[in-house]
Length: 375
Image (cartoon, rainbow, N blue to C red; front, side, top):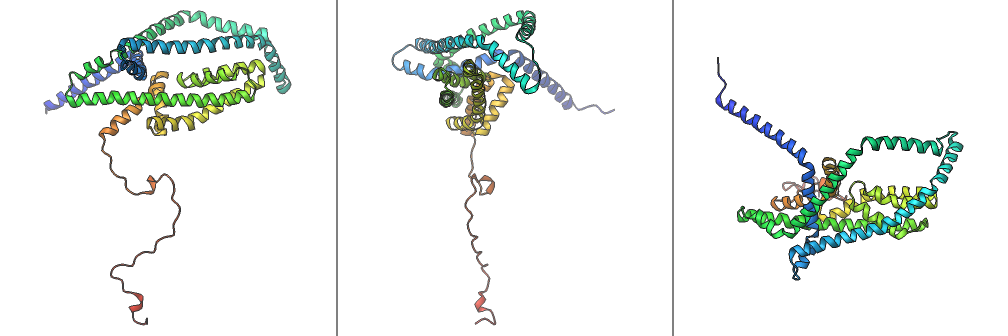
């Protein structure tokens, strides 16, 4: 009976060990995904605030103090904007709540007149909502509390990580580079600088999109004569660009609610405008702006947001463009590029048709006049 060769046994053992290691790593990544996302987000925020921190350091500030000042400034700006918009929205939501019974009656009358159907009365609908939501909240009260506590701990951890990464930036880079040879150190520093550049490009593109959104929303709200058009437009523009996944809905909720307090038709018109504008932004404005600011192909930008958003959730969607732009810039540095061949598949725009050029006679062709019978 032939025995199996010894190399086959070793190969099977190595394959089994590699498979087990891959399974362990996959499980570990699944468990540590929240922590990994906190670290990646902290690095992204630290890269975003590093330019103003460096600006203060060059003017004599201690790096730790400069980092703290920038973080406090950002927090105060966000808090002030949130307080201003929040108080306005709370007041308007209160007005809307007071008008809900009247709007509900109008909707019920329209449905009855249009479709010859009846919907539950206000009291019946309110009882159903209270019973449904009350049971759900009671059943998930512990889970909601645990998630809130976990979110608070993650937020505090994120703030501390951002501070230490930015305040200890040079020391952190020195620690990473110390065990590496000089050529690898240059690579690490190049990657860091590229990531910072692409992050700045991403933020600038988001600011431009927020301004375009705010201007378009302001024009629409002014045409419809909706109150507080300017602050609502700014709120919609900022929130829709800097809050991942649900930012569009949160940013558009304010204008829709306040328009509803004036007239349900205006509220519906604002809702239609926001949905339509979002499609224009997603498919026309955002891909072009991000590709120019970050040198990413629009199709790659769109697909990267979908892919990383699906894999990593809202944080992945928010960080997808800086991550892809950084990897693309690094790869392009080390990949040799050749001149392209001439082919119609590589032409962006179809050139203007030109008359065909007459073909040259072959070198050994005899002129027609020299043939027998031609004089």
